Structures are given as structure tokens and as C-alpha cells.
Image 1 (tube, rainbow, N blue to C red):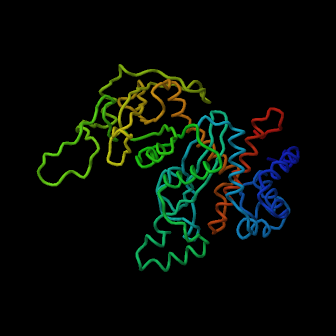
Image 2: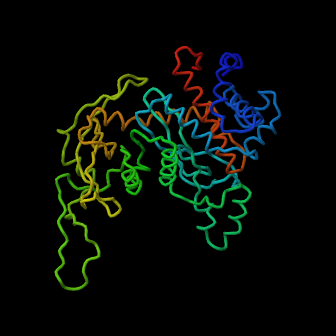
Image 3: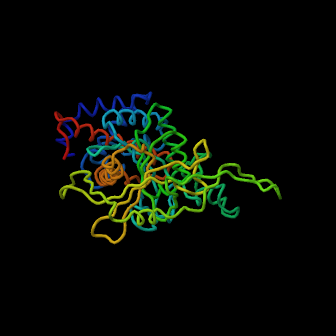
Length: 413
């Protein structure tokens, strides 16, 4: 926003800040929070503290102290933002994903040479994992976690490297209880935290980085959270009509340690299931209007039972039945995308595709959060500072989203 645009909505921003910063008990902290929001919203090439302070005409040390050393509860602010975002966005789904923050050097918490889907390569970066409330018209982050690679885990590295890792963790203020956890585990942690505050997803969507993990899918099943997630075509599944048979002990040798029914060795790849159905099974589905016109393609819908020793079974010992969806455009020799979904068998094919494709909003979020609001401009080297910055950027994003959804507001373009 330009200074003039910001002045038009200044009263609304002050009311917004007063609400979301209610958990901050000190008035000077609430004032600093509102100032930081103005700095993020104002136009500017960099949204790190010094350039923001210069544009605001304030001392950057005050902003720095508020983000890095002041005592305020990030979780309480984030939960207040999440409740407000769910009310404003009215999501049809929550989407999980992660994004890379390119960094120079080795001092920023969690930085390492690691693969980032955002960057499309292995690079020196941090990885942030996020959960978003989503519709086709709007979206907003609900939570963030900073991924810690094993090289930042003092319990996972070799004994010889431990002193260096302990020192790095100390300089960044990484809490003793924070260790390396898989990204899907960070998502489950956020879902549980949000559930404790009465927030549950109507549906969870994710890419194959999460969908391929059967432990993640089982964790969602345990929490009765429906999902639709992209997967790779080489994952194994049985046909839906395949039934397990009881294990029979011959009476010789040791009795089997596993007692659940045994499935015959009929599991094949998801790609093979789709090829067996053939192009004759495709349906043309339209899911939304894009910037270049109507978006439609050809899809196949099957019911299967995903296989694997880590796939949780139903209480009767059977593998759960799931939707297998494949996008197989007429002009492609092979399917280009696959999804698995736990949505009911009665779910319409059009809804399945709408939910499967709703992840596009996340890319929109990340672009705006980074290019417009400075999500990846934080130059501090503290663990809590990173989480506070992304929380404040989320607040700025929610404020803009509210303006856009209010036809009476002077919303930014």
C-alpha cells in the first residue's frame, strides 16, 4: 500500500490490531505490533526491520526488540488470528505445504542445504511448514513451523559434531525440546494445536510430499479428518473388492505373531489400476474459471484399498477403501497426476476434482506473502524471531484478505 492508501484504512487497521494483539498484556507491545503491521503493509522493496523503520520514521531497534527479545506469546496471537481467519474465509478445505527461504551463511536457525519445492532445487535455505484455510476466492495461513534438519538436532548428530550444534542452537535460542521432526509430523502438531482451540479442517489437501506418507494419512484417519492428497503413481493398492483371509497356523513351528487377516498378493501400482481402467473410463470435469479461461481436463475415478505395512487398518482388520483419482488429459500418453482421498464414496466427481485442485491458492498465498509482505525478508537469527515475524506477516495478510472480502472497503489491488 502507498502511505495514502494506508491512511484511508488506518482506523480499520488500528481496530484490527487491537483485536489480534489482545493477548499482549502491555500497551507498548500492542503499539509495536500495530507499527510492525504498518511497516509490512507499506510499499517497499525490503520488509526487514531497518528499511521498514526508515519508511515509518521510527527507531528500528524498537521493532527489533519487539520481535527478538520482548516477552509475548506468539501462540496466543496466532490462535486469535486463526479463529478470525476461519470466520472470515469460511474455508472449504485446509491445505498444508512448505516453502523455502533462501539464506546466505549457516547462522540462521534451521538453515541447511536441503531441497525446496519452492526453489525447485537443493539450496542453502530454511523451510517453513504451514497450514492454510482455503476457498477458491480467498485463503490465509493458520499456523507455521520452522523445519529443523537433523544437522540442527543435538540428539541426532554424531558425538564429535554435537558441541558445534549445541553452540549454534544456543546462539539462535532454539528451545531444548525442539528437535528434528518430519514435516508431516509438524503438520499433525499444528492440527492438534488448532483442534485444542476448537478449529478443525472440513477437509485437508496436500501435495505428494505429504500424500505419499502413509503414516501421515493414518494420523489423519485417527483424528477423523477427511483428506484428498496427491500421490505418486507407483504407490500400491488392492482393488476395492479384494478381501483378506484369516491367517491359519499349521500347528508346526512357532505360532504367527500377527493375527490380523492376510491380504492376497494382488496389490499393484496406482498407475496400473488406472491403465487397466483405460481411457474409456475418463470423464471430462471442469473445476473453475482461471485467468486464461475455463479449466477442465479428463479424469478417472476408482475405489481402491491402499496397501503397505504402515497403512492403518479398520477395526475389522480390513484395509480402508479410498478414492483413487487420476488426471489423464486427452493429449497425454500417460496420466499426469494421481490423488488418494478418504472422502465418502458418495462424493461427486466434480467435488473431488474441485478439492484436489484447490491447492492452487497456496501458491498465490506464498507469492503475496513473500513479494508483497516480506515473509522471507527476516534477517534475524533467532528461532522465536522467525516465528514472530511469520506470525506478524500472517496478520498483515489476513488484514488485506478482510479488505478484499469487504465490498465497502478500500481494498488494495
